[in-house]
Length: 635
Image (cartoon, helix red, strand yellow):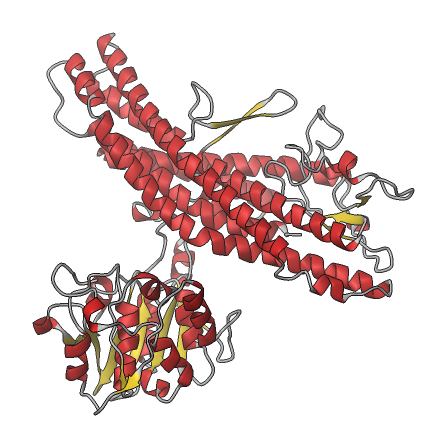
């Protein structure tokens, strides 16, 4: 089973990317609508704008593809980790129950990592990818339709004399911003539509549709895994989870439509129990409005009477749950209104209507004040992710000053910190699983100076960005190992991800430091204080990694991805951190503040480290296969 917080964590990460996409689509439509000098007549203007639909479509597909690739890259890992948590929880519950019943508890343990589990994970990933891909395509269709409608409405207003062209366009921009972009699943609608059994049609915006698809796919797959485990081990009883604010509708169309009536209770899968009700008939498992159905965050887990522990006695009263549900719906309405006003400001700004953007800010301030009062009166907790709009922070500051100041505080990891599956051997497993070629690393015939190593390694980068693996190759040569880089591909990709850099930095016998912070500059300032005079280190921060050193109190970084005459050590300043390392004072790229990791590794400490030497074999590249030089660039 998955908890609501585990489900929300995955959904938030994917939804954040598509919020950024929605902002990009809105901005693209508005810019295309407002660009260019207006012709002498409204007819000419309409013709000119409609003739630009093809160019707009290309811009839209480019934006969708870029964001989809970001989501696709993380989706498989997120889904697998979430379902692993679910399977682990089920296995532990079954083990505990089997131990109490004097059965073979190891049966449950043997289910970990089974082919069945892998099949369910693969199916869930495939389903999510298919849905996100379809959502992206339909988002382009909806954006194009919104553009056409805006052009035609503006034309009609001008043609009928009810507005000037400037005012008509301005009104269209505001409407696009407020409405946002949804996906077309039904003629005449810019939103995903879902007809409930009671006949009511629910419309979803782009980010809501993505969240719905991820939550539903993930939770249903976790439920199917639980069913598989129970069936394989002969478990008949399950207990549903519960939470405040469970779904409650008037005149429910089905016995299971009100989730507050079956949450937190024990059921029989077979329906043959005299004590517990039938699972399927009571919860509607498999139905769109039942357990693990559309947007349902309830789950269920194996239950053993011998263990006990049913949670239904902890329940709030029906009145308490209904009050919480109504307050929750009011809060969601406030959050939707806040997002709409933020989108409106972004749209006005993209169209060059600064006065209207400031007016929208005033309306946002008024709604935000009412929202905060509502939260205070009801003692509810704000959910920051549900008031965020991608790109909003790049235009307006939307957090209190106290929170902005708090964002500069560092979170330095404890010395004993270890991520799950830490160590360089895990990086090696990644390399092997991706069929990365291994070329053993030999020792250098003689020691090299820094300049000699740069001369061998350096050059304009022809890969997607080998800064991290290149710096590690330098660390190898510094310690007497004959290794060169610029291989690119999966080798480069592996060593550019934070999780693998963290595995190296926190591996046993490695002197590495990890600082997690909102502010990259503050993190680097903290890290350089740890650098000893005359020593070289590997530094990864922002979007770049490089060798750095403390040269008599002057901090410098080693450039190796430029032309030979420009490679070498240069002064490391805040300007360099901003321009070369792409450091930021606050990470809000998708409209959501988040903490980033920053790493410092003592490269001298890597000498005689067999795991590091083995890792370099997956970097080591044949001279004639290096992707560098002519045609490359500084990355």
